[in-house]
Amino acid sequence: MNDKDSATFREQYGRRLAAQLCDQHFGARPTATLDGPAVLRFTPIRQINLFVVQQLLAQWTQEMARLRSPYFDFEADDVRQALTQFMNTLSRRIKLARPTFEPLLARAVTDTLSVLLNPADTFEQKLLGTQPAATPEQLRDALRYLDVDKLFYQDFLESLPAGTPHDRETLLKRFALYQEANYKHHQPLEKLVAEFNELLPLTEDELRGKPAAVPAAAPVAAPPAVPAPAAAPAAPVAAAPTPAPVAAAPVAAPTPLPVAAPAPTASPAAPTMAPLPFSTATTASTEPAAVPLYEKLKAGQPAATSLSETLRPERPASTFADQAPKVETLREAISINQRFSFINELFSGENMEYHAAIQHLDTLPDADSAKRYVTQDLASTHDWTRKDEHVSKLLKLIDRKFA
Image (cartoon, rainbow, N blue to C red; front, side, top):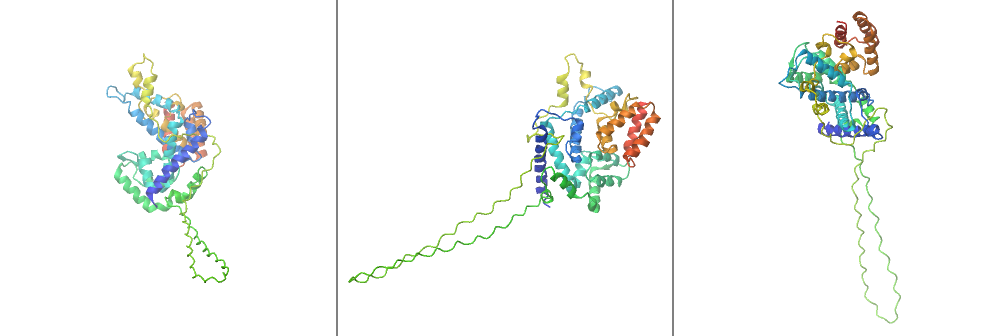
């Protein structure tokens, strides 16, 4: 495999597919925007949608981190509670236009194509991130953004000692050894290629960076020789001396025509797709400079707003259940990270089933009935046999609600 050519092809393919999908969604309505649920069902390949959300949350975290100030106590309980409430509210107001969404989509396509081709990079970028050290539990939190080959990465995390932090270099070395010993256990690449091929033509050879075979040129036959024209017989001349014979001028052989080298085979034109029910598009190759969130908030504040009110809503905090003594409704209490985690891990990406379950839990009269609904009804319906960590978080939220 030519790794450099493969990586270049994946990036180019990601940009082309993102532009095509965005054209289908935004072509007739260039000012349309996408919210969170629309992003999660934007393409039929779920992994692409999840990687878009992961990038979006990473941007959100960076914006929140910029609002910390050494002059105020951001660790105070009431501040943390207010910030969490703000974060949860704003997370339900995701609004992506084409110029900001298309670069995220192109990156997500490229990263999805890399999951099976370059597992080491996927582990480092998607699970480990920038952490200098991590426990298996911390790494497992990022599994909610993996759909392709998820069991492969999950089994590696389960092979690590629980609760033990490992430095970055150790984790990368252990994953390399695990990959070498279990390389046959990956999800087949053919299935992923077939899914992409339905959106935009793709072959395994292209994905692996193999050069396309150029057909050999057919031999060109030399043009037939042109015979010299026969000289007409001379009429006899009486009483005239016979002239000396004149040698005929030689006829030059025709110069063979130059044969042009065969033109390189052009890639087949991408077929025009019928508009997806949830697409989005952008033709810009570079992302316009985004206005930081804190600038938007500052611009939107009325003149009489105090400085404390301006700074209050902008720091990411841990879950509402961990900070507030009591929550009024589960819907308001579940943070954006937890919501995506619950949807993907407990409800197999089904947004409507998640919202129906949370809405029903909010109508139950006491903690016992709510917990029975989770551990019996929902657990059996959605097969939560290996979801103890996420179920436990949901149960803790229920305890807070009925505290």
